[in-house]
Length: 190
Image (cartoon, rainbow, N blue to C red; front, side):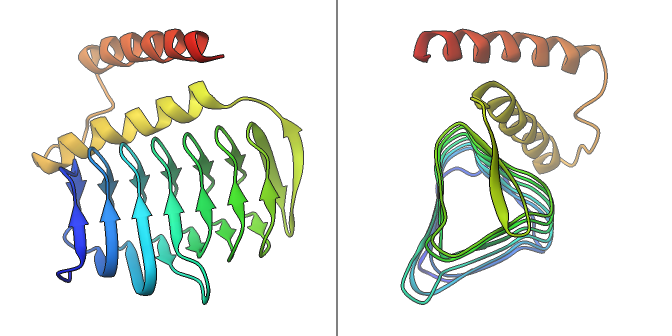
């Protein structure tokens, strides 16, 4: 990590991750094994309670920084390049989001999708394909927020050397309580 990297009380940053340039990571976020984040110009800003999963690559574009909101899940093997991902989004395994694209809040990009340069995905969308197209309009707040919570729990466990956080009665009780909280929050907003 370089001196321009600012990490605000991250839950977990795996030692194999590589973070270079002007990068800011919000509180309670997690960076998983073999993630690479590079910002030779512009900046990369990752919000709070967001997880960047194993083998993902985050880089700036030629004319754009990269911005990832709060409560997002960037799942395994994604390439996030000079784009904007708003709050409560899930980017599926092995997806690519290109320069100037915007993924609106509460959206899902299905695994293996390729979001072209400059594509504007409205909030509450499900997109998929190569190239990606909008398949459905659906508010994905609850499931995306819950997925981010799962990685927050996992990150806290990994930081303590415990690698089985998602099993057992205690976890089931915590998960059930959190889902109830998320549903109440959703109902108060929407």
